[in-house]
Image 1: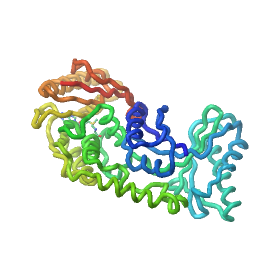
Image 2: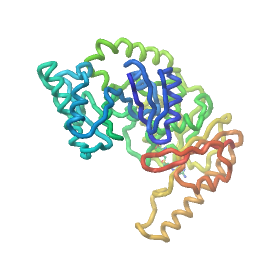
Image 3: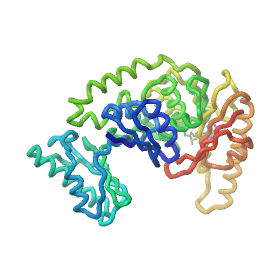
Image 4: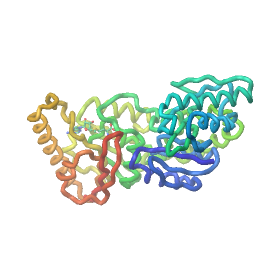
Length: 387
Ligand SMILES: C[S@@+](CC[C@H](N)C(=O)[O-])C[C@H]1O[C@@H](n2cnc3c(N)ncnc32)[C@H](O)[C@@H]1O
């Protein structure tokens, strides 16, 4: 079987390394994700362990299309009975276009018709569509005159680990935070500090990683609703989870410190760490990032500083140039304060996800890693410095 794990742009290298370390067969890089081969249990293993994948797709068909009839015929040729019954619900999500298939809703309808017709012929009844919470999410991708039909193994995207309950300003996705830790070569067994922790994403991901807690251990996956799950996968899945559980360390091997100036961020971080099961691994403090001094053996300062807007919540009206300039100066001053704080940490590493070149200028050192990553639509730089 062919699988494709998707990730945020720029994280492909981290995802490839993760999937190769899981010893999945034939791992190969792609754009926006990484392909691999294997059996169902390999796809399930990626869902259980990958910290950077957003989705894991199982490819069922890939064929040329020149219009609606070809799209329908290709989907009709797939045996859908291992994946759906007349009692499961489905939804089709479309990306891309092909000739005669410019409207995603129309293309999705053609695939849905084909799936329903196959099941009606084979089982004598048809499944229902549930666009919001389908048992089986089907993914149609149209590009280069071809249609690719896949099943989404996870359902709810993998960055939803289940612990984020509280909204804060500009939180990182859990999968992007994990990519920052991996691409920035953050040592899971050395001291870790995020002095601008916000909702705690980087510190919590570091704790989960340091304790070897797999991100998918306690969540439900769409593949568990497939008819073939019970017959082919369940016992193997139970074993994979039991093995993973046995490898969890009782505590993080080194201190993890999360700080932020804002009480709401501190509350959210504490709540999230509790729900993620790593509260005891984190020290959470309210303090100004610029006042940080080393309090442990050298490790990594890893953080995602504010990019500009809403730094201290006082940007002027849109188009107000004077207010924008004041804000910019204030931000430059803030970055200088952060750079001085880094200067006090000789022997440490700093791993920063920055969306503003002024931060690099303030630090004034040469980064040993400078890697482009996308934080949603925002381009950011992952920078690693040896201090
Ligand atoms: C971009 S957000 C970090 C988001 C975080 N990575 C997350 O995933 O939730 C930047 C954080 O810096 C905090 N902050 C701003 N000025 C600060 C200061 N002087 N000292 C400490 N924290 C500060 C803000 O409260 C905010 O939570």
